[in-house]
Length: 328
Image (cartoon, rainbow, N blue to C red; front, side, top):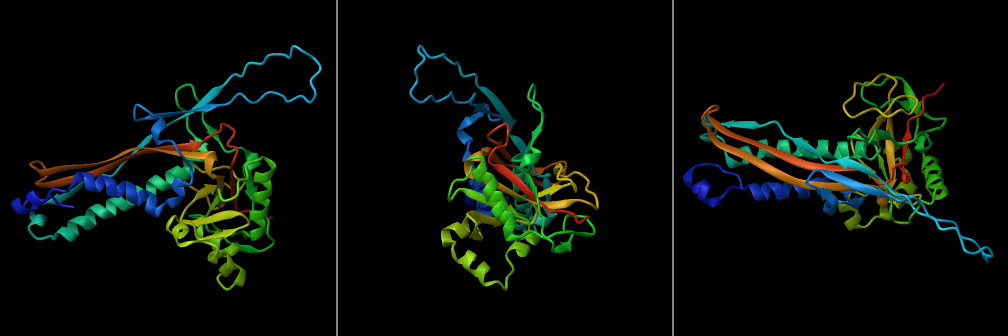
């Protein structure tokens, strides 16, 4: 990713455009779930804000209408809004003395490490934004309603797995997926092939033990193309995903804010959604460099990604979580 002219001159300039494209590609390659949403890239206003119109609702349907003229109704629409956040890496210095000794691979390693961290944080915030939205101007903060928060209720107890948590929690089971499916169907938000659930690792192994023949069947139902999109298996109509961290809650299901200090009673949670119930907007990726900086005696690099997202409806219809129950 160096320019030929720079390499020949001894100045290790990165090819900015290649790094920018590479970061955006890696975001979706390693976090395919982010594209299992409504793409709102084209609706970004001024590179920062996205407005989502909210329908005022449909009118009534009358069979064999006898009263005319019918009453004329006017639909009053509203909107919700979210802001694209800017995720930036700390500038990293490659001292000039090191450029005389380090190989290109070492420099690439330093920048790749920052890139990977940037991608990880961006993905974690996307999950958080799909279940909660902060204050913006006249728009108040909102979060997933209690009716869309389900708790595991298995009699099997497992060790607590949330960071810093202690004690035991109720195990997740395939029955929980059936409950979630029933919920989405009851609110008319079940669409075959477009339902997803992101499970933390411990919930994944609890639902799908490796020594189960049924687990193997679930895994065989996924195509190679789907695996590249991050889908591990399919079960109960859901495309199953997993990553190291998803959502954290308090014992009563109250959502923990991203980065908020936890408690020993905290629980891990899985996130389930219908593809068109959530959306994601990319505002762009930038790579910055300052070569031969006279203050730092070396080259300085950093990256920025602008991305945002939220549930597409103010009532979060089509989104739900499954959090660990705590035995009495």
